[in-house]
Image 1 (cartoon, rainbow, N blue to C red):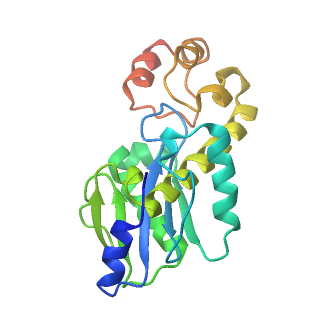
Image 2: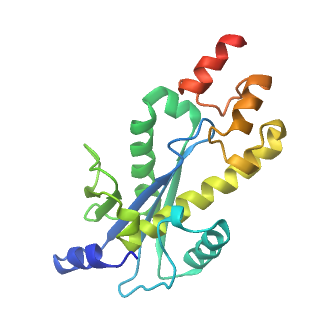
Length: 205
């Protein structure tokens, strides 16, 4: 289970704002990348908070509501939509969304960011990458929950706009249902047209 080991190491160095950062939605064929940044209060504890991928949707929703209701917790969020992903590429768009999430959080320039995964080159805040950080750091785990649930909520809204695609079921990932809908209806404006399955199908339209 994640804990505050990384955060406590930063606090001992005199860092007052330790920011956990994670993203959701790098792999789907449709919809945005979602990035969240979280500052937890010292001594924060949670019985089941973990990497969002290890939790059921019901538990993610419950934890999400608890995190947002915690007045001692600070968080920020940003999306990078399909247009930005096409313009910058998926990695750069993800990094840009992460930086905007820290901006949205209102962290000071002296904050220190714990980013899930590899280190981010030229990140505008002092930072380090932590591989599998969402399973190690409570701050990153909290960010993973917020990023995932906010993206899921948006994909449910897109499901109302594009009901023939079944976004409420697969959230934009390349399932058989999604690929079948793409073959029948073609890509929408929220599809990532440079991603191979979409790009290959576009020849038919």
